[in-house]
Length: 147
Length: 147
Length: 147
Length: 147
Image 1 (tube, chains in turn brown, cyan, red, yellow):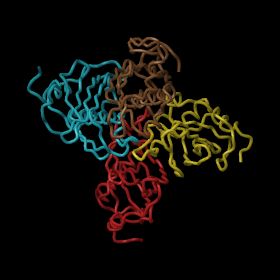
Image 2 (cartoon, rainbow over the protein chains, first blue to last red):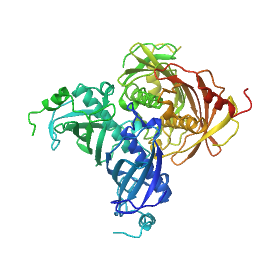
Image 3 (tube, rainbow over the protein chains, first blue to last red):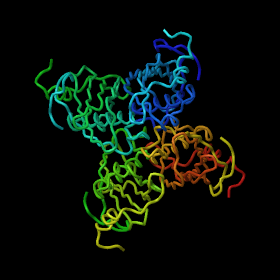
Image 4 (cartoon, chains in turn purple, green, orange, red):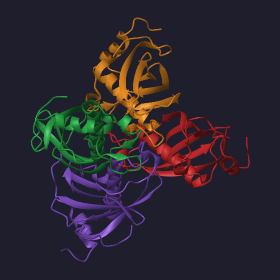
């Protein structure tokens, strides 16, 4: 996890998640099968909550969940078996119960794809809940500007 | 496969793909893990090319591929183990090498999620290729209006 | 679902499950990635409980589970994108809480792989439970011989 | 990667592969869905070839493949979201074209499952090939005894 500014990401420094492209990710064309990218994105968010926010998914899921309300991705260049991908996750100013995320995925200097999602904090029956104060503090403490 | 108009889908009648939510699709919260939805979408497109366009993926992949250039999804309601989902796939007027797709996914009368994607016809090295004439004819023959 | 004898399967007629090899199942070598076969096996067992035993997984998982205690597979021939696989599932005489399953997977006349598993009926905390009488009756009613 | 003896593993010291149980691995019962274990096993073998044998899968797959001919697993205890699993991989004396592997998977002191597989070195059309001398040397150099 390194710190840097992500242009247009709303605020904060990016969280970095490393993912080598493995055999299981690739299709008969020898490139990443795109639904696997969404598994990687979910792994990246899970690592972000665990390592950066100190609120691991395995704890969250005892009393609620963090579903994805919407997600979009634009694939710029293909990725191949053995590529070392860097997922840079930046986040917007948190809403009351939701959070916007931006993923910029590169291999070396090459942009491979970008994605944006909105996640929501919900209770066990799916009702949106305000983010806990401790989480909100962490989400805003990693930057000086709040725009 | 049944025929009907999909509002805003660009043109044509929808192709229908049935998918029961299985054990493997669900997460510890008992609902579909959203990356599995993208596998279902890919299965739906694979069935569309096979059954509606008579150009199966297993044939396409001997000389090229149909990668997804961009995709977005908005999840309205959760889906649970045992739900019978209907994927209604509609398509836009085909571009020279690309095609816009719209997916409207329901369970009974309830909208579960919507997705939009752009797929591209490419050769074995990833260079965009014009759609074959036969495919273009099929994509436009299933409707009277071409806008 | 058709009926036939499966040699060595213990007892009963085989339950048949059809699975076309799809794009998502295949690896960069163009053949089925073997962990996907275990997903297919699970889908086959899920269909068997739903269609042949009338005790669907989505009902079972409200009050318990049917975990796999052990499984083995021997892969004889590779399967490729577009192959139409037939999973023939046969079962042994049911134990008190467990059940032995045998899977014979073919494409046309060609044997692709064989697998054997033992599944167990458990409650919500994982404690083995006797099979319900109705299920035991169904498991033994589909054959005249009990060895 | 640490070194130790694995009883019954044939020869050599174990290769260790760490895998945290993530959200994507778990089913509605909150435990690892067993086909995901086979993906983890494949990831472990891929890491073994890359880190211990210096013959990464992404290199192998340009001129051949390493399919799994047979595999078996016995599941002793369930694993849950957040568990930190250790995969200890040991190997038998290499055959001419095949190699036996043994996986002992633990969480802390608790055995979760064991698996055994046989992998084969093949060319691009699936014909078995003798292991390269360099690989054979590495497979035998990590131990003093050859049984």
